[in-house]
Image 1: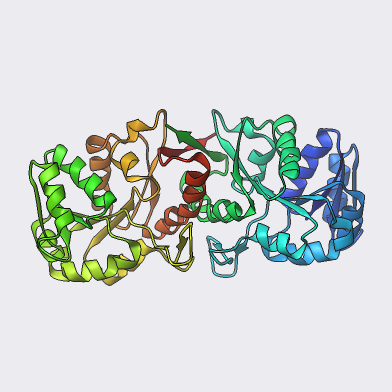
Image 2: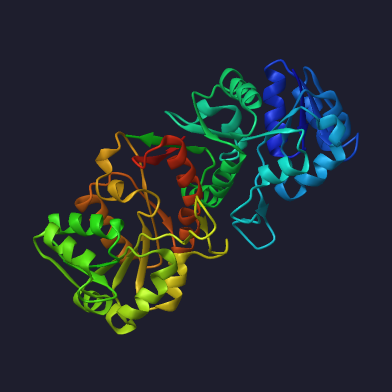
Length: 216
Length: 216
């Protein structure tokens, strides 16, 4: 599959490298076509890795991962271009975190909204699937690094898009427990988990953890 | 131990009954001394159960449970009276949920604050310990009803108060996994879990669940 990674940070690099290793054609998008971080990633990832602008990556792709900072995501999708996004699946792994008020960062969204919904509203023809945003990027692509049972959540309005993403999560990344929370409003729930994730990270002194929902 | 339960709702009833069953003297506080819900509970709980005003219950107790609605909690503590709260431990199991904007309810606190901290600021001589607020009241007092490993979080500024509460959680309620997140600012994290809890409740169609933090 032809996949765009939007963003050149650690999350984008980690997801991009895993997708290349799985045999996908992956183009990392950034503001400029010759972004040095993307170039370094292309060299390191090898295989079918390439780089380009956000617009290049979006036009190239069948499916996109939003790995940009939450506060930048809307502008990045605008740079990608509505025409290139039409009908495609956006896997939104970002969180609406405000880093300007000290550590830990806090959610900047209102409780009756989420970043996932903001992106969906701005691009109605895009199929936004919120997932993987409740863990470190190392755990996203390698759930087995955390022993035992633990879960990834999925939220989205389009059943086919969610099915495609779930397949990638299970067959590609190795996720055994996928909890479909329902429509995209449920992203309010998973994004709101971040304040607890950040406190657990502070308390456990590692990002190598995840949660498992245990039911009677 | 002499324990006050502030609030006559399901959470107060459930916690109160469990504490009576454990042999504690439990007084349920409400706005009026003859509250009919509290009277029904006293009859049902038997043992060393009693009722009174918030002020009666606070004066009687060595340790208090805040089982009121988040939005009412500050007024309830004012009714209990600062003098009766001085030096005591308040186990705050409430959440700052706003039910006026439709379902599910949403947090009304700012992301740089929590209900636990609001109560602590208003009553500096009270030792607020935030815990048990991330699950249904049935699970609070009977963790074994959810099979396998799962966790309760504790936040608070006073180490001795936290130690007392942890002992009650483990020896009284049977909690095997207690995660001390640190000071009371970490209550921002556990209170922010509620939006995800509410979505899980909607998706799993039961409140009989909890989460387990799995670490590498």
